[in-house]
Length: 273
Ligand SMILES: Nc1ncnc2c1ncn2[C@@H]1O[C@H](COP(=O)(O)OP(=O)(O)OP(=O)(O)O)[C@@H](O)[C@H]1O
Image 1 (cartoon, protein in one colour):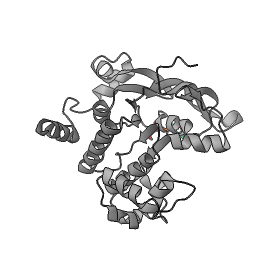
Image 2 (cartoon, protein in one colour):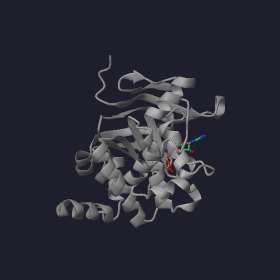
Image 3 (cartoon, helix red, strand yellow):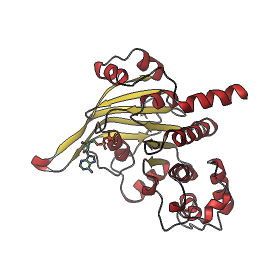
Image 4 (cartoon, helix red, strand yellow):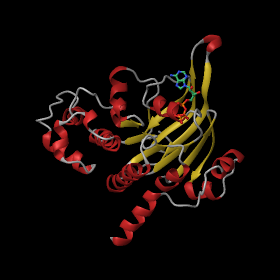
């Protein structure tokens, strides 16, 4: 039985790299979580430990202490098949889509593998592959091509399609737009926002871009040097940050009240609907 209000919960998480005297703790008892169907924005300066949380959740980094639960089920310490199964239920999409796309596989094969890892047959799953490509606004003919044949923004959309094709319970998006220029960033964020609404995704959105986080998140958690300083509803934290560090972080955003380009595009779409 769990009393956690969160679909995905992290409790008292400590992660350290290295051993003995060389060990360095990078997460110090972090507790956070995301409610079902919501998006948690995870913010903090470079090196604060955001990616480490994501990687610990999906089992890439071992944890020292703490607990990770999904729907109340304890995932901590899973190995072998259990770990593989969890990696499917929680999909991590990172800044570099090359990391999740095998350069020797066509896009069709990559998505087919996400749908069915046992029989990753692009022809057998052609209809599903095409549906996911269309979901991320790509033509079905993309299935026969290789990752290097696409632009950065297109590759990121393919990585999102591949992650969603698994039908995960939670998606963790780690700086997925930081390598993209502003207009492509807007395109990927718009897509994510549409998918989030239509598929009622539960998502952790990691970014150092506070304007973007404000737009896509329901709650925001602020991380500083491996410690979680505060978490709350976006509106509350942005209007009245409790921690001086959060205040500084928000103050350092130039023209903070200025709405990002993609937000304006979304508003236009909504008012036209
Ligand atoms: N595999 C690793 N081995 C040793 N140290 C690591 C490893 N991965 C991360 N670290 C260290 O952990 C700390 C947190 O890194 P992490 O990548 O989680 O930060 P971040 O907040 O995601 O930063 P950024 O926004 O720059 O991606 C950093 O000091 C980093 O050097």
